[in-house]
Structure formats: structure tokens, C-alpha cells
Length: 72
Image 1 (cartoon, rainbow, N blue to C red):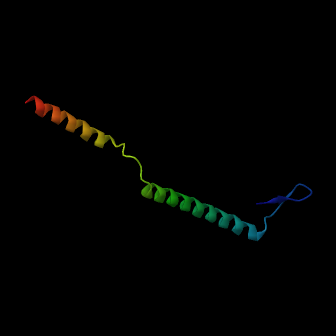
Image 2 (cartoon, rainbow, N blue to C red; image 1 turned 135 degrees about the horizontal axis):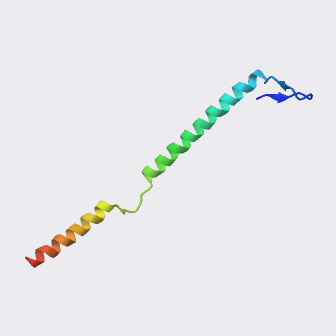
Image 3 (cartoon, one colour; image 1 turned 45 degrees about the vertical axis):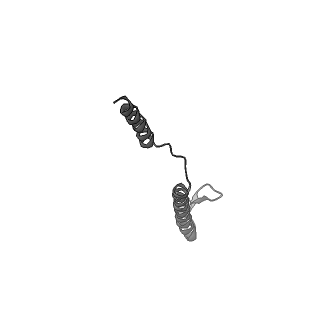
């Protein structure tokens, strides 16, 4: 985080600013982790309609078995 002097030369960054960058990066990481955890929690607690292919196949198989039994 260097800044320009009026003459166009770079002046060294203030020693405390490096720590600010590190802290900001850490806070961003924490915020991202919290958002990911919230998303996972929402997925775990939000009921969704059952559109599972296996359940659909089980229903299909049962119908097929019932039709097969009627013919025998």
C-alpha cells in the first residue's frame, strides 16, 4: 500500500497499514465461512419436495409388479 509523493516517487507504506490489510483479509475469510455455514444450515433445515429419481423408480416398479400379478 504505497502512496505517491507530490514529485511522483513512491513513499513507503505506513507500518500499521500492512496489519490493516491482514485483518481485512481475515475478516473477509471469516465472513465467507459464516455465509457458507449459513447456506449449509439452511439446506439442512429447509424441507424440499421429494423429487428423488430412486423414489420415482420404486413407484414405477411397484406399478409394474401389480400389473404383472394381475396377469398371472
